[in-house]
Each structure stands twice: as C-alpha cells, then as structure tokens.
Amino acid sequence: MYMSQFVSITSQGQITLPASMRRLIALDLYKKALVRIEKQRIIIEPVADFLSLGGTLKHKAKKNQNIDKIIQSEENVIAKMIK
Image 1 (cartoon, rainbow, N blue to C red):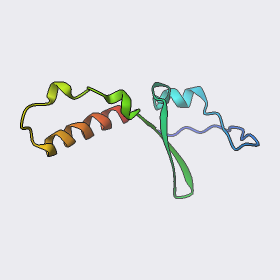
Image 2: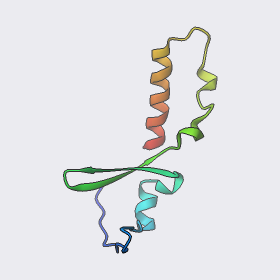
Image 3: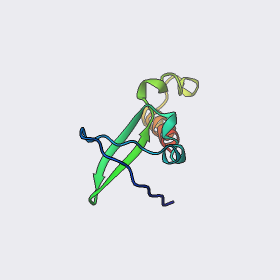
Image 4: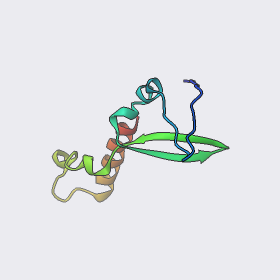
C-alpha cells in the first residue's frame, strides 16, 4: 500500500491527516496513535487504548491457567486491534 498527499504544517508543528488516509488505516477508530521516526520517516500507527481492553479476555481466564498463556492471549488480542 502506498499513498501520498501534501499537507500543511502549522506554526505550532501540527499537521492534519487527510480523512482518506485515516480511514485507510482505521485511525478514526482509535483515540491513540504511536508516532516514531524510522529511517528519516515519521511512522504513525493506530493503538488501542489499553483501558478500552478491560474485560476482553475475561471469558478466557481459567483457574490455574499458565501466566505465559494469558500473556500470549493478551498480545494476540492487542495485535488484532492494531491491524
């Protein structure tokens, strides 16, 4: 996937992401984003709000379940929400 578009940068360093780009990566569904610099490029990734995940794995919790399995299940859910 490749998309580009010129945007303006305000005097405060703010930019507006075009709606078509936000929709393409489902950024409108999230309140948070991870911003990082990689090889002289700015990368923006949608991130689920951790508090919104509360209770999502409750049905999978079992007595005496291995903590490693629980952590793996949580990581899988978060990975799916980021995609």
